[in-house]
Length: 193
Image (tube, rainbow, N blue to C red; front, side, top):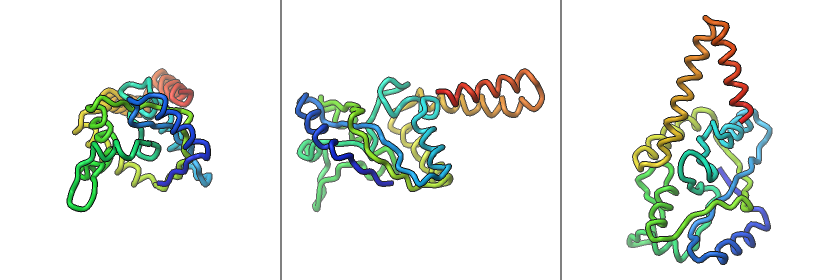
């Protein structure tokens, strides 16, 4: 995946960092730059849907907001202060984590008393280069990682229950007209959120 900042984003980032000395990390939204492929459009819809993510990609969801790696800015000197150092360089991320290394970094930063914030005025153009199986593999790794580091538990539980509920409704809708109505009503509610 690649991301590109909009021209005014650097000025906006500078203003945000200068507005509050306790801000260490700023995250924003991502806008899909796609080739018109159906999978990319569907994935973008799900990733920006409250029901698809539990609202973790913006503040106000079911758990704490953490800026995402593809749209996250932090001061270089502060990053060095929370990094580990080997003989050759500074290690910003925990290399043992297969995904979600930005969450572990932000938690380390917040232990110093600094904060991370969401800034909707800092979007990036996000080019996703993934397919169904690569996306599923990454999501299984992500679920394992966030469970290990102890974040996003409520949204993951909600999504697991929602998936089970919808699968059961879909199966049972073959046998009952009332359940079929409930299943289609649930799909409509999902599409509207």
